[in-house]
Image (cartoon, rainbow, N blue to C red; front, side, top):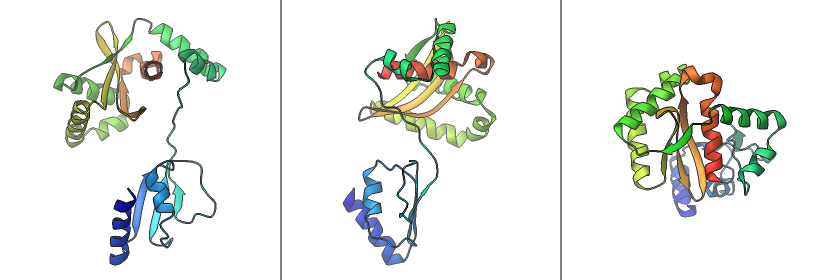
Length: 204
C-alpha cells in the first residue's frame, strides 16, 4: 500500500494536482500513510468516517460516521449491552416474528429481483437509487464476490416468503453491511431490524 500511495502522490505532485479522498477509514493503513506523507495541506484533502480527529490536522475533515460493533462472545452478552428500551424492543420484535428465519441465498436472477423489490419498498430514496444501471452494478458486484466466497445475500423468511433482505460482505472476520430492504406492509413489525439483529447473532 505504501508503494502504491507513493506513486500516486508523486504523480499528483508532478502534475500539480490536488488529491481529494472521500470516506477514508481512520483505522486504515491508507489513512496512516497519507497523514504522514508530508504533503502540503493545500494539495490533499481527506474526509474520514471516524469521529476521532487530531485538532492540528489541516488536511482532514469528518464527512460522516460509520457505525461498527465489536462482537461479544455471546448473543446474551450483546443483548444485555443494549440500553434497556432497545433491549426490550429487539426481544419483543424478534418474538413477534418468531417463525421467521435467516436464509443465506445464492445470487440468482430471482433472488436479485426479490432484493430490488424489497429495497424499493423500504423507501422512496431507494426507488430513485435503483436505476437499471445500478441494478446491473449490484448484480455483477454481488455475483462476483459470492463466487469469491466473501459476498452475502441474506433473506429473512416467513411462511416461505422473503420479508427483508441484506446484502453485504465478509472479509477478514468482519461483516460489512452494504444495503438492505424490507416488506413495506410489515413495517410495524420491523423486519429489517429483526434481520440485522439475527445477523449479529449469526456472526457471533
